[in-house]
Image (tube, rainbow, N blue to C red):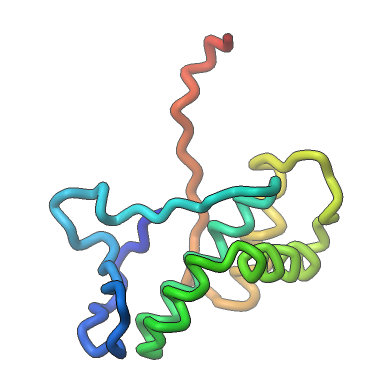
Length: 128
């Protein structure tokens, strides 16, 4: 996940881990967050974690963001809340990019022109 053009996190409260300023590093591996998935909600977790990052930088809430990164249950709760707001059932066996349209529509209504979801795939289409 990369957040583009985010304000610097220079005034964030002290934390045991520093908040990465995404999109700023020369080595982009430091600008990625891993969503540790114990369920099938990784797409929605990535969205809520990205929004939480953006909000933490804007409001200097680094400590709360860092806690969220380590709290799979809270990520799942927020993901399910997002899904409910988007009208997406939370009991499907799997999710795909087909569910991105209602999420993007919700984000556009809630945060006009602030977030755009982009999905990149390493799949070359050859299968197997």
